[in-house]
Length: 373
Image 1: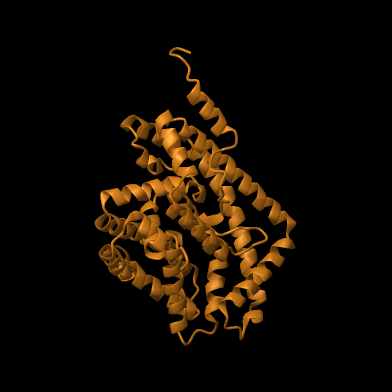
Image 2: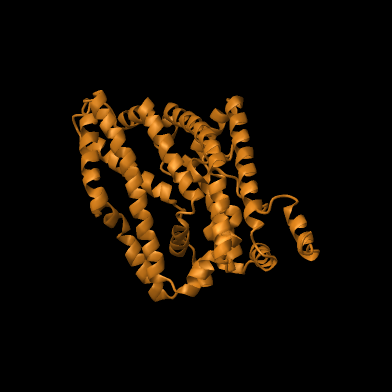
């Protein structure tokens, strides 16, 4: 079972509604795929996509979706359930609640009206009515719908977690987030809750994050521009080569062909490869700067506890992290560039502590300065 992020679920809902509306219109003179990509590739469509991706990455920066990680792993990873001590009754309740999540979200009064209008606009556009006024309303509504869907989805997932897990289990989820720090693009104050932070420390961590928001926004603009360029190139390669998978029913073979197509497209564009490499470097520099500032807020005792959670996690945590990385490899779109759209485009790994900082911090802890030094 694949891990699906909040970004992914929202995209699935929007794409599903779009393609189904176009497909239901039998009078459409163009294919569903052509209509969808024509709208997506228009200047307004491209801007909408960039804005949506920025909102997603900002949500990761702000720590949203952390409860989703717990619920998602509970539903798909037996090791995680066993490690948290989830009973069969708890799992049954969580699965039962989660199974109706999509229907609840679409029936929520905050999104239902927008969903109906969106479907109607899509039908009009598919039938050939592509006036500027109609297109502008369509893109405006898609943007509003994306924001509201994500908001309602987050509320639903958070409620599932808090209604079905004990306080001790929620603490283990927080500890897991520290152990799996290498799998997250950025640290957030909420990740340190398992370390018994004081109110003053919580305030310090929040101020650190606020102080780096301008730098983050600058990074975000460049990252999203490069991602959009990469995404468009991969879509072009797929559309130009879609006949290669016709008649192939094996999903694994289809994925292999798509990876080959995308790898070849990327290898043929060294300029884009360079841009992607630069974004990865900027990504790491920003993340490392944020880490060092946040780590400096921790007491020696909290630092030692955090390092122990990272270096010596329980066996179930090791297994879960290994599974997360394996699923990420399975769903990576381009093995040549190891580049994934959305919030999964950072490079996870074991170097969660910036190079040199661990030694400097441990030395500082062994030889603390006296007062006034």
